[in-house]
Image (cartoon, rainbow, N blue to C red; front, side):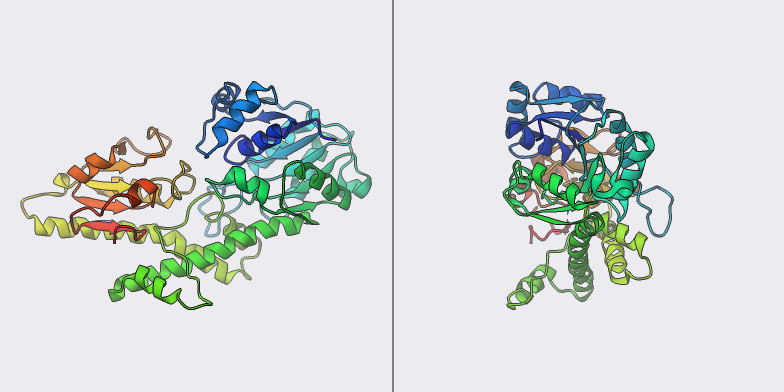
Length: 423
């Protein structure tokens, strides 16, 4: 049924998905706007960090089942997995930016043929799949689409949001249930047949709008619960209570499971998706919005804790100035043991420290090789864990990477530990 599949977007979701399809014997054409990513993949290499992915991609490329290009080619199914960020308008409630979805839709439209399936995997606000269908219809008036022809349409369209955890993507792509929301029942049926190529979990069928809302709901649920933990950490700090001990004690109740606080919430999902709900129903989403604001404000609270630590250090060392104080920041990624910096509170905190701190700033991030101009300022310099422990005066733990968990607490009182791993 599906001899060739095309994945549009070869990032943290698109590339693993392409690789898994290829592993199951289907020819895959990956499309990405970045020539460097395309060239890397065509060499049988990868440009992201994901356990086990390098070997799968290498084998798929060598076997002729995976090839990357910057220009869409004909296929039987197209999976769109491109970013869905916010528009940079400064509005109180961020507005979703569907520019990447629109560009991808218009790019594949010329190579569509009757019987093709188009699946939107990008996490999207409610109604995005329908808008994608409209963009495709605008480009291809010679073909019929579900919004006009229903079950008899030439092109099938569905939404199937990714539901995987970075660091476990290859496993969860296969084992997790998938929510499949077709614009018609035949759209859903074809999409289920596609994913059943490798998905061992259940493919649960619904409509496109409900599928879109399901992904937003899952991440908003997590965001609200993280906000509770983050708010607790701020309250406990004021009351001189160890929040991690408090949570551990509270979680001994059989019906309580409080999450762990941190420096904020990052990643392209949890830090973004709740705003899609708020933007679509601002008057009805009071709790979701409040949680988002709590988590968005946590990085500023952490920065203030670092400022206090610098002030305390200078008070204890009156012979020194701020220029003499070395601050070390541990971790830039949005979660442990990955290289993904999208919406990372750790990265934003480190940038803020670089702006206010007059002294030396050390950055320890074991999952990236360099800090480019797109990541941060020239002041951000990667260094080793050993150097930071030997030379830093103030230590700021932002991400609980395994390398940091295995390290004893710095032998100083000037430690800002946002993850509670150094005690």
